[in-house]
Image: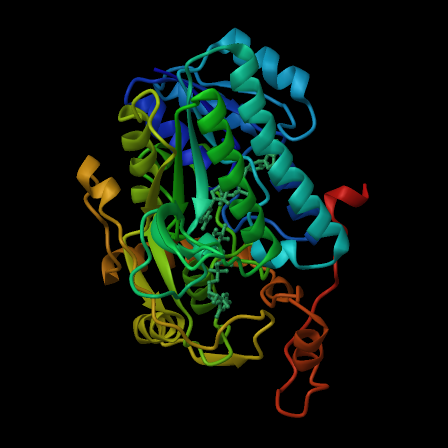
Length: 414
Ligand code: NAD
Ligand code: USQ
């Protein structure tokens, strides 16, 4: 299959591009490298030394991999070049990762809020418009988030759709299946709920075949293909804005920094290992929805964990101390989370679950590159609102101060 990977230079997109190429698909990456520029703006870098996209791709071929194409296009801003690319490459599937994906970054200031909305919503809409204008029968696979649902509800979170009863003004009741109610907790998560409406409309109006994968927090770093050579290593974010919780705890343990549990640590979230994330993409593109089928939605996660429990596991494994950080986010102190997740397993996913061996492997990577860690970049300096900022700065007498670092400009400012 010809597969375009939008955002294929990123943490999830790069290993997915390698896997799809390794199993025989003809892969082309589209990326504007904005994620690398944001690292520069924030004064941080991936824990692992990632090579330029050209070096990565040359190395893949030198090691026997099939050629993977690369085109630098801003999917949100350069519609004409996106359309030309789609017309020339004629993808049978487009995997769309090309969005600003950090919740803290999206809450940093008005500049980052506006950038995240403009980038993410325009990118998704441009992809859908270009598929319609190209007249190709192309399956769009999008990376959504579990955060579209919020993290608790009226029972287990369904896969995308819920049955709802509506009371009419005349007192009569009608029952309908609707998109499960959206309850985003950040500007970033909100953009993914807007994406859902775009998908629903273009699927209804233009019969585009779409799979929306509501992914949980991804942990882990390398896949089998990334381990084939040093230049193929995957990105590993540990900083306060882009690092995700379990990977952050493992890096903190490697450098002797107390584990940054926000608030009570009672937040329960859905998780998936990067190897399963990549496998889910293969399964999704190799099993497209039928023509005319409504948007297919899967919950791409394998297990749920409470943040405090993850900290205890990492502390036991490494001897790290557990810290207490005033929560920079406005979120529930604790929640239960039960998620329906049968769709991808029916397609053949064999879940990788949290176990000591995998955690030790990541801890090993963290220790290997520990000298690249900038301790000043570990604390998050993005706050959900003024009250959260005051609490972090110790102006709220109930909360101790958190360490801080220099705020950065967003790509929208340049
Ligand atoms: P990432 O930031 O590492 O990768 C995203 C890539 O998209 C980057 O290489 C970036 O340069 C590119 N990009 C962004 N905007 C673009 C644009 N306008 N044009 C072209 N390229 C653009 O993020 P990731 O962790 O790989 O996440 C990929 C996708 O998966 C995101 O959409 C994210 O919302 C979703 N997701 C990620 C996680 C996670 O834990 N990492 C969990 C759930 C969902
Ligand atoms: N947390 C801590 N300490 C930290 C970092 C995070 O306690 O040092 C807590 C947060 O408060 C939150 C939970 O851990 O309650 C998860 O935070 P996270 O940064 O790991 O994940 P999140 O911000 O939700 O975002 C990540 C990805 C995003 C994806 C989302 C899936 O960055 O792209 O959509 O996970 S989900 O969480 O299921 O919505």
